[in-house]
Image (cartoon, rainbow, N blue to C red; front, side, top):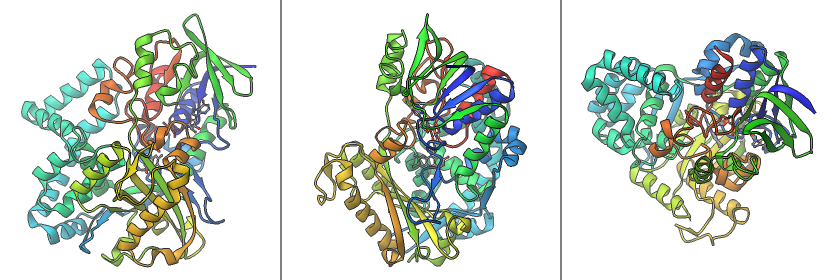
Amino acid sequence: MSEFDAIFVGAGHNSLACAAHLALKGWKTAVFERNATMGGAVQTHEYTVPGFRHDFGAMNLSLFAGSAFHRKYANELKTHGLEFAPVADCFASAFPDGRWFGVSNDLETTASRLAAFSAADAATWRRLVAGFMPEAEHLFRLLGSPMSARALAGTGWNLWRKKGFSGALDTGRLLLSSPRAWLEETFESSHVRTTLAAWGMHLDFAPDIAGGAVFPYLESMANQAFGMVLGKGGADTMIRALSGMVTAAGGKIATGAEVAEITVAGGRATGVRLASGDFHIASRAVIAGVAPKALPGKLLPDGSGDAGFDAAMKKFRHAPGTMMIHLALDDLPDWRAGAELRQFAYVHLSSSLDAMSRTYQQAMAGMLPDEPVLVVGQPTAIDPSRAPEGKHVLWVQVRMLPAEILGDAAGKIAPDRWDEVKQAYAERVLDIIDSYAPGLRQKILGRAVFSPLDLERENPNLVGGDQVCGSHHLTQNFLFRPARGYAGWKTPVANLHLTGAATWPGAGTGAASGYMLAQQLGGN
Ligand SMILES: Cc1cc2nc3c(=O)[nH]c(=O)nc-3n(C[C@H](O)[C@H](O)[C@H](O)COP(=O)(O)OP(=O)(O)OC[C@H]3O[C@@H](n4cnc5c(N)ncnc54)[C@H](O)[C@@H]3O)c2cc1C
């Protein structure tokens, strides 16, 4: 048995960022991770063929590069090996009619592509880009502040002071809009609308879901303004750097160490019991980077002592699942729509807003979508170090899928457990890519398929393959994440805090919940 100031359940990047900050503030910290490797959704492994490095989950590290944690600790992270690979050609969509549109960091390049679809859209884009930094100030402040009345009042006051009442209402309206509402009132080309709407599908914002417009807006403008970044050699560069910071500051990280119980005495968290039977004491904080459902009756066998909190954690809603297909390739896909697509980090494949809405609805109804939305990542187009010379990896994210299969919208795959159908469904995905990039199959040197169930097996926070650990719809975001009254990372158990994607400000690699909690506990 050992005694620490703070014990972390899980080595997701939020926990590691929090542990690093507290360790540097002199706290004695320990991180216990059930897996053999750290990082949770941010890991890189040779899943297919030796020498081909695949990002298990997150590939785009722009949120981390732009985070408050990175601003504060850029030097320390660099000392511990953090390296980014900058991306100029960020995201694109290829369409069944053979056309494509893409956003590159160079404004003239993007604007000329837009003009081929609509001169009005090209002008609108320039206007949006010109107005982005003043708008982003408010949105980034909102997303980077705790959900406290004080912080919200400060953000609101600043917004009103800088934009006036009407301007503030415009920002509020953007935050409430669905992707379709914003895209249809802003752009006239359906190709442009569809390209941007794909960003909502990275979360669970199908085109008609209120509150989703801000994601296409922020991603497209931020990619235009700053480009994108990947991890050099793999996304795990950030995990190695974070864990290096923790251990250099005296923190302990144990892998293969599942936490079976958070021990509680007198309404206060006192430490953890590992699955191995070992106990460890935490005198100041236990910080759980877990999905809310893992608390009542599981990590907290007797519950939290607050029936309302326990019920809210049990009812926490997860978004539809994801399948990941990792391919080792002889060469990048030959995109029918244009060879330029080979240089983009992401190529999205979905024909229209309606197709995205249908896919989401099918997944919600338990059906295997006939036309899933595909995010085809081409990391080696940017960072060739991830594969042997001249070879490539493809990172294919399949959005959105049911956790439990009740049927097949295409009527071809008999409903069964994911282990039985995942290869057949992966064939459907490869057929779709092949229809946009003929000859893909002949280039495949190896493949690894992770069904939604496999994602959850790898990381129990990805419940049902939910890559964002909880729906971000308005009723479960902002002051309601993970539940009303608990957006400040606290729980009814004294000294027990939550962090991670299930907590404010949600999923992504921005380390925001971990760092904000760390500052709350340990000061700036
Ligand atoms: C397929 C996929 C693609 C994604 N792509 C991107 C992207 O490109 N860009 C982006 O910004 N974001 C992306 N995301 C989202 C982002 O990666 C996650 O939101 C983020 O990494 C979650 O971090 P976290 O700190 O919440 O912890 P997690 O990454 O969820 O890690 C939690 C850790 O806790 C461990 N754990 C859980 N329970 C226990 C226990 N009882 N005992 C010990 N350990 C435990 C788990 O094993 C895991 O290692 C993606 C996610 C997925 C799954």
